[in-house]
Length: 450
Image 1 (cartoon, rainbow, N blue to C red):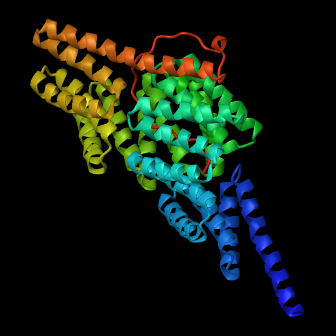
Image 2 (image 1 turned 120 degrees about the vertical axis):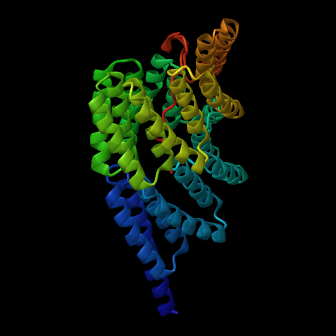
Image 3 (image 1 turned 45 degrees about the vertical axis):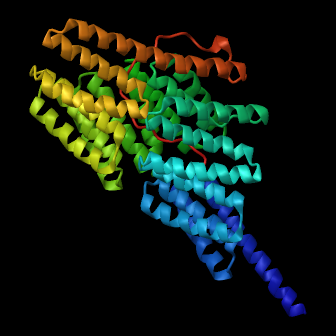
């Protein structure tokens, strides 16, 4: 009997050691992702030796998170799937939901938004079965960003508002992920002051939590906002500050996104050699980490850059290379953008028939995705096309459509702002009224709880 008690005591102590390692991995991830992965692997080995299933599932989850943050997506999915199998065997719905959310985050990072939304849906179903409203608010935020980057701004805002409503009804502190995502929505519609308001809130929250990795994401978002405000000094300062943190803690994908944004900043400054340097660096790293959607996005950016340089041969080649990748991986939003770019390119040579064929493809896909911002730009190019053809009546018709789509975008964000004020999320005095207008969507880093 004494021997059995002794064994049970040893097991308890050993299990506690695994739990301690898992807590250390959680804590280390805030500022040292490489250390977090090393500690997680130690926890995996010990938990396997002891046959401690709950601790093993948590260790697998931690290892997966670290791999995702370092852009090793294949390894992340492998770790997560191991965790998911154990959690389902243990019928631990809470742990299962965290794992499903983490798997969805990987597919988000790989720009497979449909797959990401499937896993977020499954996660929300699991959370609702146990009444975990706090984490459901986080997952709704993540799902909203996937809808947003998939072109459905209305669905994105609905998710954000549902998340906000949960925070309000639970009297909970709003997670900075929601501030970041709302900032991105306003950035997409050209409401820059409101965008900065949300990003600043997110920055304060990440700094208070001493989560430097998420702080770097927010710094990058602020830097990107300044690009569109044509404040390039501030843009480069914030992006460079974000880059320092990302390099230190090994988030390769986020670092690469900063390279791409620096490329955009220098392109808008018409410093083309610097822009080309940063875009090519981004392209190289995106290929290395297997982020195919960002590869085709960067190829499209280069197509637009060479268009500005009047090097139409190079522009067309980059567009066509990007289109090949986009179609292969079914990246609909980039197919829309590249077809629009090719239409503009052919209009330079007055080839209105070829331009129309590209515009028709872009319009059909953008309508299916309910992407008003893309439809707005497409209508502008249509208007230019008909002006070149001498059909000024049709040109005016499409210019009117362009403004109607802008109005739809503005109505979406205004509705969101009114509801946010009603929910006490922001004060009416905190925001300034600005006209909304179109700009090209950039892929943003998700800021989420894994």
